[in-house]
Image (cartoon, rainbow, N blue to C red; front, side, top):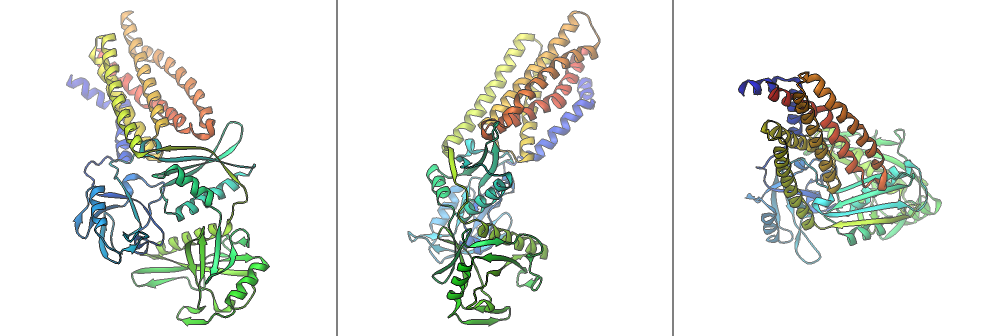
Length: 527
């Protein structure tokens, strides 16, 4: 038996299988010993944001999310520990918060109900890089359709605008993606983890009001009063007059881009700046009031107004702002990100096309956790059942055990593939895994049948037996792929996960696990 094991390990097809398994485990990155609580998002203008904490990107891997591990030198092992510590704090109290990446000193703000507020939303940590969809972690999915036909370029701008606007409200754990159906209708899918149906409806209904104020006077509104926002390199980017420079604690850069206002908006700005004072400092001369930017009555930014704009109805003005970082490269990157953010806000105030909510699916986190438990239980029962059936059918453990071994490896490789491309595993994805694994078991049974049938006929040409088996397998493979391709675009893209995982699973099986299984069976049964 040791000889056969060595022979299997040295087989080229088995080596490919083992390499795929190792790469999948690296992509999944299982770590049961990780501790703390994961940061879900950081609210804008909060204590945490002012301290330099940032929300994780929507497409960031679960294991890459920043984790809070200590508050005032006290270990935070789970959500209960975090909330117990936060509830003890009072407004204006300072805390030292330590994460797996840095340390932050935060000063608590006072919330509307008088409690200490830091602007940090947390969630349970993940022990792998497997991203769970809304069906498994809870949240809301909204299918939106423009009320009239629009171009793909508009859909791209619409998604960028919706991401920015939803982020303003502290919801950074968002996935917004385009979709279409077989008839060519275009949709936008919005997935927000941890938000309920009413919250999402309210947010989507309220989007569209952008205002720029000087003091209490509104001087222009986004979309309506801004006729042009420069986004090209010739009139936007790092400010050549100020550039980048070192400051205390790192680097700072400045951006600048031009916008054009309507004549009425320019006149309103002139009136609002007429009686303002001019203040001079080392950076230049500015007016005593700043230009305040509001989105749906919530302040998102503020900008200095150059002294040369006082009491002047200028249609073309320049918007500027800073960006910071620990290195010059990081500062430049953050500066350009801040610039694009402001440009996005200024371009679209009220959306020019009405959006209709076609469908809303809302799942509670408790129900998502129940889905996970049930899926694991069903998967375990399926493996046990398949093992028993195969053993009863062939009465040869040499064929039954490799099938189970390959089945488990196939699931790991498929999850590794999903982790590598950042695809969310939801109920549709689980269904795709079941189809792929079921197809794999069926193909392996075909290989065993052809092999044993050849022995019964005293046909000892192993290559011919395996060739006969793979002819059947490849025919089934192309048939199934052909059936899955239309599902990539059916149902406004909601079935895309099922189709993608199924195609990936059966492809992994046909080109990696089936050949390896054939080699293993050949080695085990040949002598």
